[in-house]
Image 1 (cartoon, chains in turn purple, green):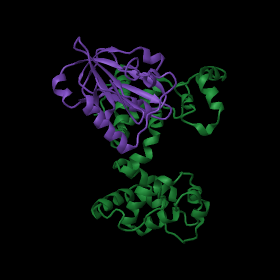
Image 2: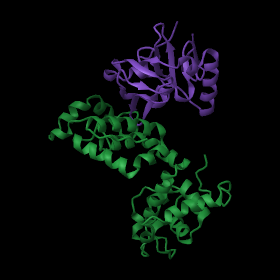
Image 3: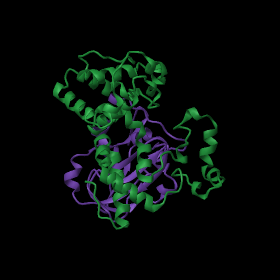
Image 4: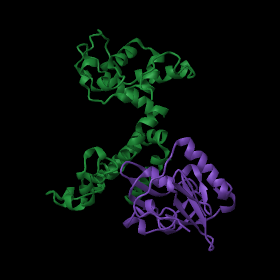
Length: 156
Length: 236
C-alpha cells in the first residue's frame, strides 16, 4: 500500500510526523522503528554521514536521534515519539546512502522503546490522512522527490 | 522573478517603528560603528569598486548614506533585503572619507542574526553544513564536500575526486591532511577550547535563533565531548 505524490513515495501503513519528515512503524514487541521519509532524503540529497545516538539513551520527542550530513546540508532526525533507543541501524555508518535508496526499509534509523506512545501517536498521521497532509505540503512547497540508482521499487 | 530592490517606505510598514529603532540602536551601539562611518561625498568610488553592485541591485553607497542619515526605516529594509548581497570583499574600504560600507554591513548582519530576522535565516540556510563543520570540528571546508551534486560548477573531475577521496588525501605529504571529514586533523584539546569559547561568548544563543535543528545537533556533539573531558557544561 504505497501512494506517490510528485514522485514521493508514501507508504500508507506507517505513522508520520509530517513537519519533521519522519516515520514511525509499530512493532509487535512494543518498540517502534523510526526513519526519515522519501521527501527528507530528496531534500537532503545523497547522504555522506549518518550518526545515530547511542543505544540506551533516552530521547524526548523532538530531540535528535541521529545527525545526517549530505554535500551541503546537515540536520537532525528528530524523535517523533519519546523513548529509549533500543537498537540502532549500524549499517548506516558504512552505507549512509541506504537512507536515500531505502528510506522505509533498509534505511531505518533507530528502534525506540516508547514511554508515552498512546498520547504521542495522536500527533502523528497515517493512511489516507497522511497522504492528504503530504499532498498539501508537497504542493504548497513545490517539492519533487528524486531517487538514486538502486532505490527500492515498492512494487507489490 | 523580481530581483529589484524595493526601497519604498511601505515595504515594511507593518513592522512598528519602535522595533526598527531598537534594531538601529543595537547597530549604533556597536563599538565599530563610529570607526567605519564618517559621512559621504557621493563620489561613488565604493559603488565603482563593488563586485556585488555590478551583478545585483545593490549599492554600498545607499548603505553608508542611510547609516549616516540614521534613516531607521530604510536601514530596516536594507538589513532585510540588501546586506546579504554584499560579498564582504571590502573593496569599498577605498572610500576617501574613510567609510567602510562592508564593515557597516558586518554590524547590520550581526544584528539581523542576533535577532533571528527571517532574512538572516534564509541567507544562512545554505551554510548549515559549513557552520556545523566549523563549530564542531574547527575546520570550515571538508574534502568530502566535493560532491558532484553539491558543486556541479566544479566540473566533471569532481566525480572522480569524490569517488577516490581517501586515496587522494593520502597522497598529500603531511599526515595531518589525511582526513576526509575535516580539512585537517584537529587536536582534541583545540576542540574543547573551541567549544568553551562558543559557550562563553553566546554564539550558541545566536545559532538557536537562526536554525533550531543545527543548534540541537551542535549542543549534542559539544555536551558529549565536554562531558568526556570532565567539564560540566550545558547549553540550555
